Picture 1 (cartoon, rainbow, N blue to C red):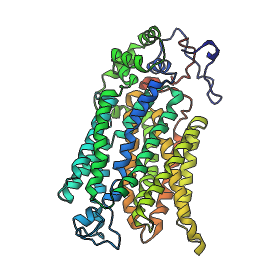
Picture 2: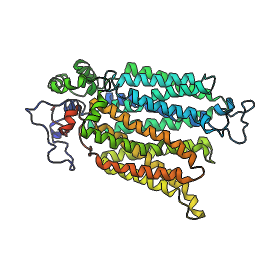
Picture 3: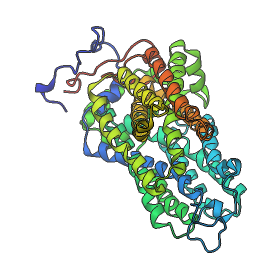
Picture 4: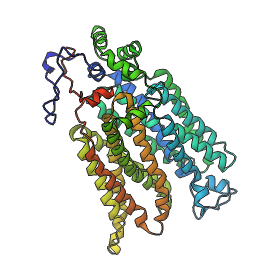
Amino acid sequence: MADSNNSTPLLSPSNSADELPQPENRLPSLGSTVERCLSEFNLSQFLQALLVSFAWFFDGHQTFITVFTDAQPPPSSPASHGGSSFSSIISEWDLNPEDPILTGLPASSFFIGCLVGGLALSTLADTFLGRKNMLFYSCLLMSVSSFFAAFSPNLWVYSFLKFLSGFGRSTISTTSLVLATELVGKRWRGQVGVMAFLCFFCGFLSLPGIAYLNRSSSWRNLYIYTSIPTILYSFVVKFLVRESPRWLLVRGMKDEALNTLRCIASISQSSLNLAVSKVCEVEESSVSNMDIYSALKVLTQKQWASRRISAVMLMGFGIGLVYYGMPLGLGTLSFNLYLSVAFNSLSELPSCLLTLLLIGHFNRRSTLWVFTTMSGVFSLLSVMELGKSWSKFQIGFESVSFFGATTAFNIFVLYTTELFPTCVRNSALAMARLSGVLGGVVSPMLVAAGRNNRFWCYGVFGLVVGFCGMFVVLLPETKGKALCDTMEEEENGKQRVISSDVLA
């Protein structure tokens, strides 16, 4: 509970004059009620957020594992399986490395599974399944299908299992991020989001290490080593993770919400019961009757919501095109594959640390525009040929472009969670991530075209991400604003900066 010395409103200079605390005679909204309960960050909230965010660690493994399992054998290694220490699907199944359709089928199947899963599963976390159950089933499906991929008898079974893995993986990052940010107050949303990005960085960075230790063994072992821990993690989520109190209140489950808040909130029992008892019943009942696909319907029917989701998806496509596209070309470089992936993943760390700084001190709109523009400019610079000495800088330009796209991606994900209320937040974020995955599906074709003309790869990357980044002007600023829970709250502009003395 806040003391009397900290009773001034947390109102930043950038907030407009109409963003004042609600009068005492007005019933509090769902968002303001939960915000009051979670305003003080404690150890229980930290552990819950960390446990949920760790799903990104395993997401990093399965997203980029085909860089090693489906790698083209080096020139010194025979293409056949016998007598070679280098093992991948190409060497084991005698695939033609020059056939882009067959060799690229498993990776493409994975991303297609992400697309289909994003469309089919995006609303389940907002409706009857909830955040926790969606995370559990998604992790379990991704890990089990990856485990069975280790025993694939041929390319076709392997590609089907990669499709299932992508289908399950499609909602992991979105659901875990939404759940983690809904377990804390608005002051800590940025830090919790960066925690998820750091977990992804650790998973991405550990993958080349695991692959290097497995370099003299079959590619199948790599799936076993990465899938078994994920299966165990799935059951940890099932039995130890708490459901979002925001989602529980929105769905009308007050008793369950109270139980969760008792475990993670740093307020007295009497204050907690009083806060929840004052929640407006009209807001609650208007959302709890939503069916599976009503979230998507609401997003398209409301003019402000459709404008936001359209702008978000256009930006997501441009950012995803660069974010997923650049790592796919690592196998074509003359550098050591393990070191190339390690260096690529290391760029995620400064990006995460920079995001932590930016998210707390700068507004989302301008920051997102700056980094998408930076990514586009440096991607275009890597295409230019201004003499022999210019080629020495091209790798550096590509690295800066990828760093800009990574930072833009981090801010983009956090920004999207703040643009939509609880009743559709997971659906909106899933659609945003889906547009990024669509960019990942398109990028391999551009990488292939760029082998003869670099402009079709990095030139197109730069133009698209720069153009798509400009759509941020259609979105409102969200820095310093509390999360809303219903469409009515968001539409009526009931985003209020919560005073710290509400429960004093």
